[in-house]
Length: 218
Ligand SMILES: NC(=O)c1ccc[n+]([C@@H]2O[C@H](COP(=O)([O-])OP(=O)(O)OC[C@H]3O[C@@H](n4cnc5c(N)ncnc54)[C@H](OP(=O)(O)O)[C@@H]3O)[C@@H](O)[C@H]2O)c1
Image (cartoon, rainbow, N blue to C red; front, side, top):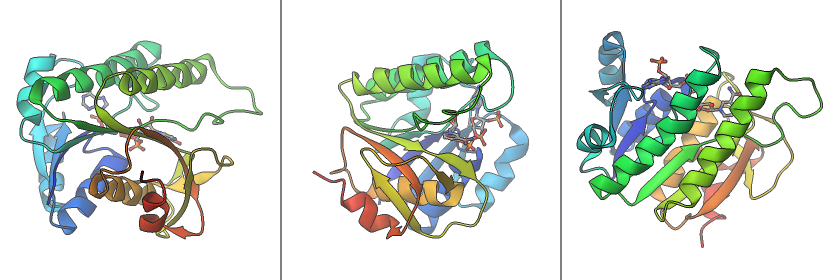
């Protein structure tokens, strides 16, 4: 049984992960900032933890995380706000979570990042370009942290029902992936600490999720 702290726990991926963790007997603690989400998180089997990533310092976040075996960072500014919010959440938010994990003595951080080819072949907005750059800097920060980590780079997220089958690898062609299957992949990563210090690209595919993740263990 693992105790997992999800930053972005009420997000679309975060809440799917929380539900899967709880269903498998793990403790899922979900950081969220809207009090209206508390009841929904509880209904999923998660333990809501109130906190705004943009307002907490590392000590305050470490106090909330204390006792966790792993941190999953799935927060993001999404479509809301401009570059400043992307900097604050996808960028400094990840740095804050890493610092808090270090202070709380939590060894393992799993990061939901972005697929490098997202947007390639079309004209993208300056904001999207900025988002991709910040996501990459967050990857760099975590990879240099000295912690145990895995960075998951899903292709374009969809709300299609999960299939339980994915393509996961160090370098794979770009594609879409249901959020359900991203959550399923994160659950498998939580349960497989031997998948460590690896950057994983993820799309929909044909391999059962557990098998796909196990193949990345070393
Ligand atoms: N969309 C794509 O195609 C795609 C592709 C690859 C990777 N990704 C990445 O995948 C991740 C998860 O995606 P998703 O669909 O689950 O996104 P989401 O539903 O927007 O979830 C992001 C979560 O971050 C939370 N958050 C934002 N600001 C916060 C703050 N100040 N304090 C605490 N929490 C805060 C949001 O809470 P609020 O509701 O309170 O704002 C939300 O719950 C994101 O990081 C995204 O960049 C997306």
